[in-house]
Amino acid sequence: MMLPVLIGVMVLVLIVGFFFAVATRSRDSFSGGKKRAKGRDVILKDADKRLSQNPRDPEALNAMADVYFQEESWDKAMKTYNQLAEVTAGSHVTGIDDFEVNLRSGLSAMKLGLGDQAYKSFSAARTYRQDNFEVNYNLGHLEFERKNYEKAVQLLKQARQQDPDSPAALRDLGHACFRMKNPKEAMAFIRKAIDLAPNDKESLYTLAECYYEAKQIEQALRIFNHLRPDPVMGPSACLIAGQIHTELRQYEAAVQDYEIGIRHQNVKPGVLVELRYRLGAAYLKDNEIGKALPLFKLIQAENASYKDVNTLISKYQELNANKNLQIFLMAPSADFVALCRKIVMTYFGRAKIKIVNISVAQNEWADILAEVDTYKWSDLIMFRFIRTQGAIGELTVRDFHSHLKEVKAGKGICVTVGSFSEGAKRYTEARLIDLIEKDRLTAILNTVDAKAAALPVRKK
Image (tube, rainbow, N blue to C red; front, side, top):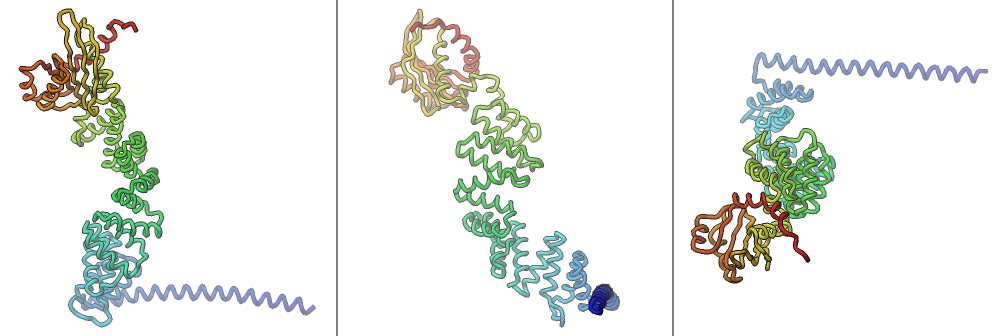
C-alpha cells in the first residue's frame, strides 16, 4: 500500500519542480532582457550627456557607434564612426581602435550602398592594417566595380591570403582576370568559386566566356546551352551561343538560339534588339528573307539608326519582291547558273542558241559561252554574270576581255546586279563588250520566266 503512495508523491514533486524551473528561467530571461535593454539605454543616455558637454568626446562617440553597429542601424553607425574618425585622426586615444573605427564605417557604408564613402573608410583602415580580409576584399570589390581591374586583382589576391576559400573573393578575382583578357587564369578562380557556390549563374556564364575566349568552343557551348532557359542569364547565353553557331556556319542552330532568347520575359532592351538583329541575319543566311524583314522593320521602328537596318530593309525588300533577283544574288551556285542559262537562252529573240561551256569562279561570277545563230548573223558570244552588288571596276572588265580572246568569242556581254565604274565604261567604248547594270538586269529578270516558257520544246 505504501509503495504506490510514495511513487505518486515523487511524481508530483517532479512535476512541481519542473514548472518552478520553467517559471524561474522565464523570469530570469525577462529580467536579463530588461537589463540588456536598460544597458543599451544607459549607454546611449550617458553618451548623449557627455556629448552635450563635449561634442568631440571620443569615448562617448565610440560607445554610441558600437551600439548602433550592433543593432545594424547602419546609417547612424556610419555617421557616428565617421565623426569619431575625424576626432581621432592623427592622435592615439586610449581604448579607441582606429582600424576598427574605419573598418566599421566602411562596412556600414557598404550596407547602405555608398561605395565612395566605403572606399574612403576602407582605404583609411588599410593604413593601419594591410592584412585584413574584409578590408582587402571590399576594396578589391569596389575597384572591380570602378573597372580598375588591375588594382582589384592585387587586392583580391591579398584577401585570398587571409581566406583562400572565400567564394566572394574567388568570384571577383576570376571576373577581374577575365576583364583583363586573361581567360585561363580567370577559369581557375571561377571554377573554384562555382564549386563553393554552385548557384552563381553569372559566374557560370563568365566561365563559358572564358572558354570561348580560350578557343575551347565545345566547353563554352555546353555551358551556354545549359544557361539558355535561365530567366536572368538565358537571353545573353542565347545571344553568344547563336554567335558561335553562326561562326561555325550552323545557321539552323543559331536560329534556334536566337528564337529561345527572344521568347524570354523581361529581356534587357540592348540584348533584345541584338537578338532580333542577329536572328534576322541568320534567316538571311538560309535565304529566309520573308522572316528576316519583319525583324529588321521592328528594330527600325524602335531605333531607326541601329547598325545597318535601313540598308538591309531597302536591299532585301526589293529581293523579297523579285524571286529571280533573289536567286541571282543569294541562291546556291547551281540555282544561280540555271537562272543564267535561262537568260542566255532568251537574250536574243528568234535565235538558235547552243551553250558550249559554263565556268563558275568561286560563286562570284559565271561565264557562259554560247553559239548564237540568227537570221542575220552567227557568232560565238561570251556572257559573264557577276553577283557583286557594288561597282565593278576596270580590272574585272579587262579580265573578261582577255577571256574573250582566249575562247575567240566575237562579242562579250558583262552583266551585274550592281554598276560599272567610269573606268570600266571607258575601257569598253572601243571594244565589243556590252555592259548591263542593275536596272536593265532587273527588267530582264522580270520577263525571263515568260520568255523561257515560250521557247519551243526541243525534241530529244
